[in-house]
Image (cartoon, rainbow, N blue to C red; front, side, top):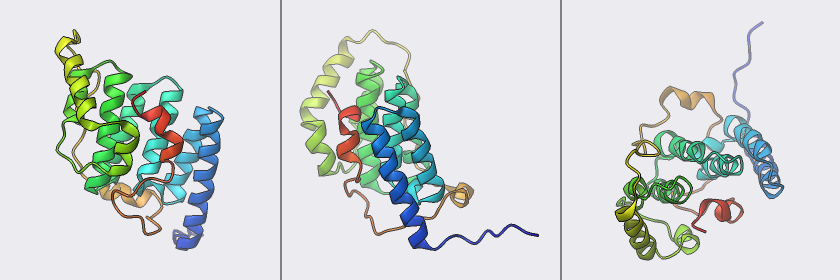
Length: 195
């Protein structure tokens, strides 16, 4: 007997994804890093979440709650390098990555590579992360006095696409456009933005 590899209908995938999103946000509100991670993983594999910035933001939030900012950066890098092709989504995750590198890893020099990236920054992210010019000026001042010589993380990856890995996750569902505010943004913003 063979294994049926027929993908489920899009409405089943979307319903699974919404359930996973809801449970991941509940875990976030409870401060349960493991719950966030597990429900987000399920959303990616069975609910179409790999193609959304929401899941990569939740993964990063989970890592920060666990006290692992390098893993948070790596989570954002997965979205930036593999799954999110759109310039608006790339810009938002890049900016958030830079703030984590600066604030959580105390590496303003490396953070400037992200914060100075010439990307079309979405307005929804700007409202929560503060005035971009002020943030940049502050990071530049911190970089000029930083004694850190070794980068805390590698530079952000270039987008290469999912390639054959795209078949290992549920297909994208819904009609979200690049640069739209992620549904989970208000839930994760406090952890992922400048404090």
